[in-house]
Image (cartoon, rainbow, N blue to C red; front, side):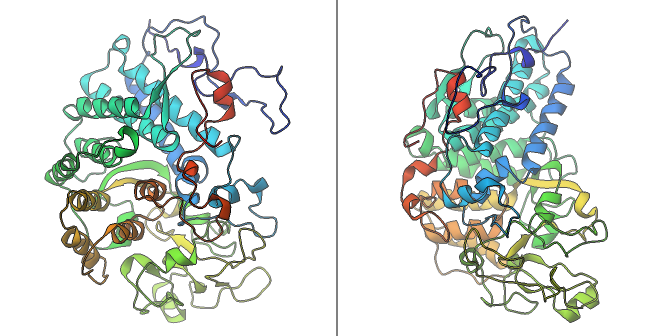
Length: 516
């Protein structure tokens, strides 16, 4: 009988027992989720049910992607796209959100530990499925290799190294630590091996599982970032070839920007997570903003910076219908629009006066008109209405705020990856970028340089997990932005997160990243 070793391995990420150690700087009491505990009594003989294990691994990955903390927070709240300001005592949380945006996090940050644990657990579980002792079919092995490549890519992208354990290693063996280059080679090998056995599928409601197009998308993404991992210039032609292969499978740009974030099949969605989109809707909306399926209102947390909002075309001081804005900036209904369309919550960037569905002025909890302001006093000291709110998944769309459909890979991203690869090969990315801008009702650019392309990626892909990765690749993650700690500006140590303290204590093969 096949048995799983997952719960019987020496910890990769956490530690089983630390009560003999005392630290004044932090509380290292462990929760069950911190560790993979080993008692050494079980020998790996393969997973008992391969298909069920793949389903469970997908579901756990989806849960991690749908969360507003951990993975999302490390990739978005740490950037110029998202911040979670403290409003009175709301969203204080001992500074856990503020330190991410300000770049003052430490090796004891809970989201750093949780994300490290989650991603490395994913890698181990995928390795167990791939192992010959589990006897997966070629497609099952391909799905597991895709999932392992996805999680390991983010491990190396966030931390610069990747711990790795073979399923058959004894529980007394500390996981090896792959360098960035070694992890990159394993990821590329996984994807190249998987491609021939992943199903060939165009736009489909079945794209909650990886297809050949998803494999090519991840391959293009990893190669595009490879200079950070290998020290050598990326194979940009391979990026272009992978994107062209995605197009050959039936994917293309599609008009109607906010329609892409509905649960309907569209030409752009290559891979979506079967996870609720409620966090993307309600974490920024005000307490008094609601929808037919959620009369309890929002949580009044997440916002964006004025400088990011200003990167879009349109009236800088208003985002009402007809303010000359490009499609991707969205719109806020005025009284007439709200009444005519029976929609009180706008799309994209919500700034200025907010309205009820009947066109009446929406008020805050003190009875004053609810007017979202561009300017904020800081990461602390905010009122109910400070900060522009962001919404791409709308609660009035079919399925409402409880639909289970969040985009992970989208063709517009692949299109811009191809443009970037062409530019870095000495070619001209202007035509490809303008093809997208024209579709999004934005003025074509006369030429495209590094800054233009990074800004275009921000405008197209905001709050879709990729901002940190883009800023690091373009050398802009350490630049100054509003509310960042001045002492952190220009310090490249922040390009990587610290290895969590628990992980260092459990695995002597790990070495802390420089500067922490």
